[in-house]
Each structure stands twice: as C-alpha cells, then as structure tokens.
Image (cartoon, rainbow, N blue to C red):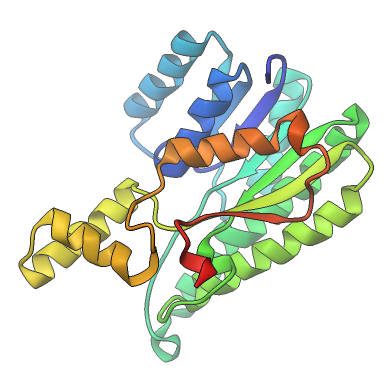
Amino acid sequence: MLKGKVAIVTGSTSGIGLGIARELARLGADIVLNGFGDPGEIEKIRSGIEREDGVRVAYDGADMSDGEAVRGMIAATIENFGRLDILVNNAGIQFTAPVEAFPPAKWKAILDINLSAAFHGIASAVPQMKKQRWGRIVNIASTHGLVASTHKAAYVAAKHGLLGLTKVVGLETAGSGVTCNAVCPGWVRTPLVEKQISDIAAEKGISQKQAAEELLSEKQPSLDFASPKQIGGTVAFLCSAAADQITGTTISVDGGWTAQ
C-alpha cells in the first residue's frame, strides 16, 4: 500500500513509535527512525526492519528538543530519499508534579519535545508534501489531549496544543493532497507504562497483574491495553486512500476512556 513512500517517525527506537515504524515498513514504506538509545541496539532495530520488510531504513538522531535539529532532519530526509510522504510526530516525554511544584525546566522540555518539535517538523515538511500533491501528517497525541489528569500540567497542555495544531494544519492544507490528523492513545503497553505498573506493584505490595488491572480500571473501561501495533494500524489507516477526506481530526484508541 505504501510502496515508494518515505516516512519519518519521531521517537521510534522503542514503544509506540517503533510499533508505528514497523507497521509502515510492513506496508512498503521506506523509514527514517529517530530517537535515543544504545547505538548497537538502534542499529539492530534498523537493520532488522530493513531485512524483514525489504525497505530502506535510515536513522537520524536529531534531538527533538532542538527546533533547528528537527528542521535539519526533514531537510536531510528529502535530500537523501528525494521525497517525504509521511511525518509521524510521536516523540514525547513525561514528568508529573503538582502545578505549584512543577519545575520550570521540565515544563519547557515537555513543551519543546511534545509540541514544538511537531510544529518545526510540520512547517518544514508541508512545502515538500504540497509540491508532491500528497502527504500524511499524523500527530500522536494522547487521551490527555482531550481530558486532563492531576499532576500532568505540562503534558496535558502540550497534548491539547498538539490537537489545536492538528486542526490548523488540516485547514491550511485542505485540498492540497496533504492531510493532518491526530491519534489519541489511552493506556498502551510500552516500557514506560511497564515501569508505572512495576511502581504500583512495589508501592502496594501486589502482583504485576493486579497493578496492571488497577491502572486500567481507573481510566480505561475496556480493562485492556492498546498495543503499539494497533496504534501503527491506526496510523496506516490514516495513510490509506480510505482516509483521503479525513483531516484536521482526532481518532481515539483508548478503550472507552474519553467516552465517559
């Protein structure tokens, strides 16, 4: 379905981003991976996807907190591959504290990586996509782009901002062959969430399974996690011809969280 297309997925060396990159590669897209991690491990991931799916896979270690680096990654991809068709803004970080105790440096870092990086990436990618008369921008937001939780001032502000950015870009690119949409995952079983489960288990002296159930029961009515592969499938749908007229909108993959 995506043969001949080139996709950048930010924050794709693990978790949701890697699930998205694998799904797009499976459908034939050449991939640019991005994110931090052990260089040997990243190379193993890169070469593994290339071998399994028969697509070109590059790695760009651009720091998503640096707007110029983000723009440089877009420019380098267009130069190296000759095009850019899909931009998935997935990179994100989290920190929790009450608003009055929230460290200003953490506020800035979360806004830079979770929101400003998407702005810089989109601003750089849109001219190329318009020129091609085809492009897909998918912003990985969160249920926290739609509702709030305590102690997450920066994250919730950034994800709400990302949905606003999605709507503006959807309007500005309407009719150009370019679409811009957001995906709002609820709880997804990633290394980050595994750590939260372990913390709950240790704190309350309960099993991992009980801790996982406790985490889910508070927010997610399905009482089950979404998987990175499912988020990848949702992104792939937004890149398909079936989604040509879907733009400026949000798809929730949250087991009913925001229906409450």
